[in-house]
Amino acid sequence: MKYSIYTLGCKVNQYETQAMETILKSRGHIPAVEGVDAVIVNTCAVTAESGRKSRQVIRRLKAENPGAVLAVCGCYTQISPEDSQNLGADIVFGSGSRLEFLDVLEKRVLEAAGQGVCVNVDDPFQRREFEVLPAGSLSGRTRAMLKIEDGCDNFCTYCVIPYARGRVRSLHPDTAARMAAELEREGYNEIIITGIEISSYGKDLRPDGKRLYLADAIEAISKAAPKTRLRLGSLEPTIVTEEFCQRLAQLGNICDHFHLSLQSGCDKTLHNMRRKYDTAAFYDATQRLRCAFPGCALTADLITGFPGETEEDHCATKAFVEKCGFADMHVFPYSERPGTPAAEMPGRVNKSLRESRAREIQHIANTMKKAYLEQCVGNTLSVLFETETDGTSYGHAENYCLVQTEAVGLRGLVKNVKITGVSSGNLVGFIV
Image (cartoon, rainbow, N blue to C red; front, side, top):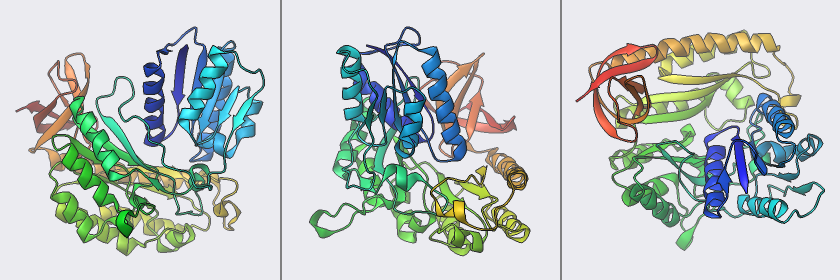
């Protein structure tokens, strides 16, 4: 079987795509661009725009591959399976078993089994087990991903992900350690520890009656892959305790880049979002990380124009963002998601104002990023090189800044680079 895969969305989707690719190749199937027997689309639903893009991709790939079996899965199809059917999908799965999804696809293609649409979208709130999928990287990538958690129990008022992914499920730390050790043996120099909400890791695991936490998994992974640097996915500020920071700082291979989920710098808005912290607690988390990892890069997500957000609230957010001094930010205008409490809240902010507020925050974020990059000049950073263009190699430092140097043949290698300047948002330096 010749197949192609199109992926939308987050690192968890990327992880699951590379896992499906690994499984298909192990079964003797061949990735291809043209003349494919099957097209797989791994969809996203985190925003209304993500849903629109998912529909657009399904429609386009159906038109471009009329003779292929079109199989769709992921968060968007979990929430809106009927849309995928109406767009011509032959197989519709949600966010459940990827192994069963591939089994059905193989049967449909190789045995020409059935002509109707196969729909298998389960209830995400039924007790699912954590599905162990192969760890690794998408084709051409130099960093591996290791998914240790799925699902979310937070139910923030703006978010559909709990409805798409279900309850928290965690990979046992012994299994995570075994997979990390294998990735190190395969030659990966960096592992991204990912999940839907990794800060909730372990709440479903109680070996010997004692609950496990994210730090337990990270310690097990670090011990199993001590030569490989570990990069953490998005963290909730509530997990960033003094103990958490101290345990991570002792490991020696944790990348000094931490992405924190902020969403707003206004306490009233955080309360309306049903977030589990206020700005004071968030700021304390940033200070703990900076104390444990001096010079670390802190990045954050933020939503502008949430229902009820006034100009005063927006100004409070701007001031708080500047106080935190992030190295970079992902800023999004609020996007209504049908079925979430926020979609029914009063005080809707018009779309143009949401977008203008996002631009204001992004301008602040760009200024902070420039300041952080300039602080790196003169330092020596450890860089994992990933690409090469016209005699210049590019890679990410442990703080996730993109570094370029005039050299070739470095892809997949980690080198120390003396930073001499900043150019077009990148750090520039020479290999020491």
